[in-house]
Length: 86
Image 1 (cartoon, rainbow, N blue to C red):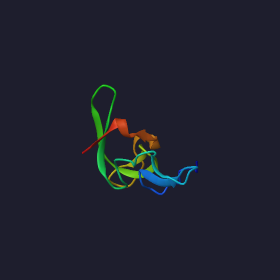
Image 2 (image 1 turned 135 degrees about the horizontal axis):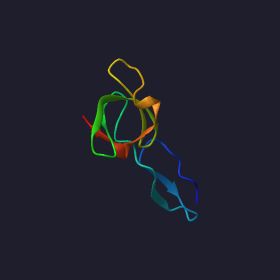
Image 3 (image 1 turned 180 degrees about the horizontal axis):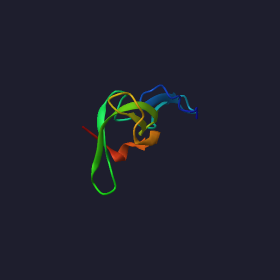
Image 4 (image 1 turned 90 degrees about the horizontal axis):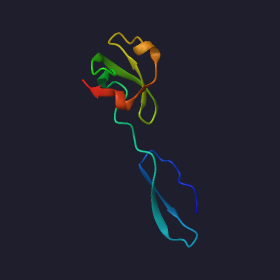
């Protein structure tokens, strides 16, 4: 079977060894986009922010900036599970 080619969608159409088309799912897209406003949820339930998405490192992983465009949270890569929309 051919490899799935990533095209930015959440699925890809390919042919198997018998030339039958199949749809294979792969990684999902990130929830947040560059410029989105959000807060970081700490382990004790308190929040830091508001911050902005500065960059999307990979699916569900981001860097943040403050309102002045300076890096936030010491420039750490923040996972989506630790963020909530502001």
